Length: 526
Image 1 (cartoon, rainbow, N blue to C red):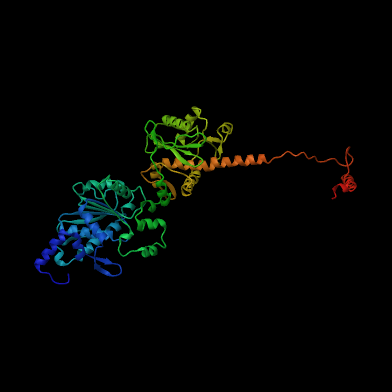
Image 2 (image 1 turned 135 degrees about the vertical axis):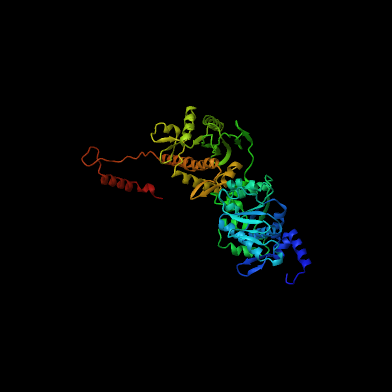
């Protein structure tokens, strides 16, 4: 305020600021602007909504676009909390210590920019990554180490750029008990794909599965930004960057193998199975067997006692429509029986099993059960060979081999089938695995803490259908076409040479034919 306040007015202002954080921020907080220097912090409507949510809700998770001033808004709220409340213990955690320290620095700058009469609690201890007021309230920046915040009772925990903190699931396990005495949490971030703590917390809050209050703040909430601004800003940005920095899109922002647009399109075709059967009711069936149609069953094998699942997919091969799926943790004996019965249910369709160490156990049991249609391939070339022909072929092996050479090709074929809409997915279990199937240091694999059993079975199915079944069918058609064009000729060639019995001089025979033509030329006239 430009004019000098009386003591009574000062007391009234302090009391009002203590009750209304938005009033305090709008009238007394100042921030450092990169171009204009120190300026008053005037909250936009969406920023005032954030302050209100911070004050009303114990837990808040904010999915935000870039450069909306939400971190600065959180800093202003912290400044208010520390100044007008005693013994508040605030911890800021971010992707890097420097990022967390930057938020602490904003709080300190606002505190030091307040009018002297508003500083009802002076800064008692001032360090680079922390400071403490004379009223006992303190703030500290911390790295994302496993012991962050442990053995402390926190009033407020701020997790900045939460979606980009690796291992936040484990870190939250240690941090949550520090809030057990009534502490609050503000988690804010731009999105970074799905499957991480931030995404899970936000989506579970949408479904009412946790106590977090959610806020979604895309670029358009800022009153000074319009379509012209958006078009200009995104001119040199990739689709993923736009989704992450501006649109608050989880599906489009991550490093998933499957593009976000394809994930959203697949989501529209998902549906509940007609039947849930099997000993654990995890065998899902969308379409029963139809005579005349061709099917393929592709199985991924796990031990049954670890974190991985055994899984198989059944596809109608002509349209690559998913008709059945299983995911569970049966023993190898039970799983072998399940594969055999599922294959028989679909007309003893071609059955493909990954032939890793435990996969060979399943393949041996299928052969012992006299399964009539097990997939075989030629070693090293991965070419498909008929099961009965394979019995007499020394380099034929049962199942499909997932090696360092074949795996990238199988994954690429899977992505191609999804992108070109050659496959129809119906399982939400499979779709969820696709969302967490990401690029990690150049290798496509499940995000840490997630599984990819259904995805890999589906990927092998796409590979088998295109490389084995279609290629084999095409080769058979070529052979039939070649055989159909072979004709028997009745022409005879004279291979006799002068001096042999029966030899006739060709020129003499030609003169005889010419004379005959002259003698009977009248027959061809008129």
